[in-house]
Length: 225
Image 1 (cartoon, rainbow, N blue to C red):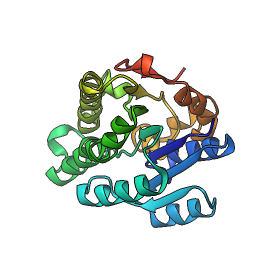
Image 2 (cartoon, helix red, strand yellow; image 1 turned 120 degrees about the vertical axis):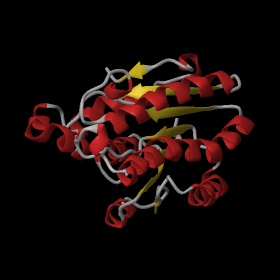
Image 3 (cartoon, one colour; image 1 turned 90 degrees about the vertical axis):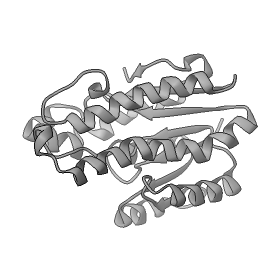
Image 4 (cartoon, rainbow, N blue to C red; image 1 turned 30 degrees about the vertical axis):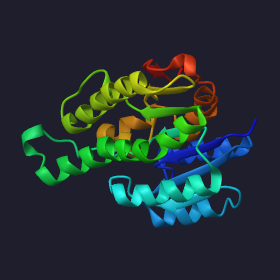
């Protein structure tokens, strides 16, 4: 059965790879990202899919986007909060307040903004799955990525609390996607990132894993196998 899937951070990395898998499987994808060139590339996919330039850290913009999406497609069956950014490798005390704020604003506030404006329609319909992308660094830590770790640990707690608030028929799960060779990983790992699978390779198993999440998984910290 075809599903309506809302996917943030769809212009590159894991999000961009997932777009291709979901489209191939016959689902309708509504995506967003901050890169206009990335959105222009996605728009070539055509109808019934929709892609918009959006910074999820801006609550009023997310509200307008969500209202428009719901009016056109209805509440999403699968809401994937994938958009995220990472700080440049540095000791915490050397990271500027502006860079710290950006990581917090996108990785935590952005997720909350999307949930705030899509979840009521999902509750009204009585069904839907919310997946908030966490990380191995949401369950462990490493030096020089303290802001990113802080946000992903926050996503774990935020999601499990949200799961307790949702009515029957819905689910929220924090997802550790695994270690994948993306631009973000390259910024942290350098050339050693190439020893991990690409986003495209990862997506072939991950897309079905995401589609298989059900209300029975509500609140469970999941990891892509």
